Image 1 (cartoon, each protein chain N blue to C red):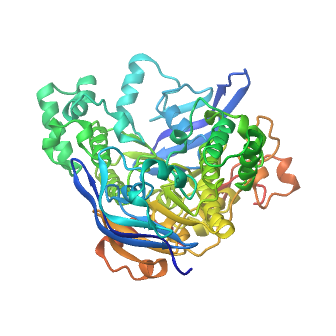
Image 2 (tube, rainbow over the protein chains, first blue to last red):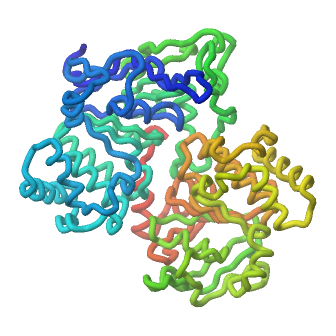
Length: 314
Length: 262
């Protein structure tokens, strides 16, 4: 295990059973490592397994095969007390802020719940702490007596972030946490997260399908396709450095105001999720696939300092 | 692109408790033109297109103004009169295709019902028409889709079906309310391309409402920026993007994350 690595997934697999008894391989052989204070981004289209990874890391579902390490300790499929301790350090922010709130609970009640739950402080100091946190994320502390439906989506997402930060976790997983919000609010939330990250030095696992956003905030980008990592990029200019045809297709889908007359090529073939794919799983949709791609499965290899790739072309 | 397909004059829309949501709004859409309306939530963009198709949510009403479509003021039409235009000449595509389709009916029967409520043709003819429209939308597997329930289809497919249903009547005007924001990148691009093809193949005009100014820039001929129920800036997209006049437009342009080397 490398230096400063605080979290690691080793050869993780996750299989689900379909209704007809067949097995769906949702996650295949995924390796992810996370250093202190790092922000990694997982991108891919819907159905590629990015949210499954988040739920695996959060231990909402069990790993089928493989290991998970947190601070050098094996934390695969924890139970009971240990799991509770683990939850204190790993927190998640969901996509739709409104659905994470109980509609009949005031913001204050929502905010203090984890601190009471983990027995970190008594009720009175928890309320006081909640007020401080609200001010830290740029909200008025009087919000503590409001109900969730009185707040806008952006404000609610701030409350969620405040509560999460208050626990001082090591890892925060953001599952599309800005895609339900307006563009301008999205920018504010991202800036808030980045600011808090530089202050408190937590690790961030950010899940999104917006590559432009990924490029802005990430130290490392994992591109996923059908449960596999096909490319790892650690670059601040991904349209120059990306090699994998799938990443290029995703890049192509980023609509930019700078370049609105570009011709967008479209991948028309639908996603192929059948179990017995021999070669590269992207080959049926790949514009530059050749014969070998349907026979031989590419493995993830390091191409240069900023790019690792699983593709037969390289 | 000469002439006006639809013209809105001094439109004011009010919700019961909130006062005027749209005030004194003027705009027009030409033949074969795509208009992008951008703005944040609460700026009144959805209210505007709902007012055009006369589907304001409860408590909303058009207080004053005219909506002139083919020389007639459609905002004064009766319910019965509306039935002949809505879905026939003016169609709407909603943000979430999942809630637009009936979850306990097969696509085929919904599609046939929607066609037969507008044109007087037999069941079999309607099925044929539906399958043909689906194929035109790039859903080659039309037979299987007609037999499927909505939950068996992906989000992108459902949105295409919703567009196909709108298209089957070959409307003059399509109103699209955030048609791609519930979809992921790859499907989003597919849908945008399909909509742009519509304009070229069927001479349809489109009003697309979005908060992604990048999407509007790619699709539209003209962009209108809305804020607080008013159109604060409206121009050809080249001008809006190169020389935005209002601070609000600049802010919107500024808030989209951009790729470094694009």
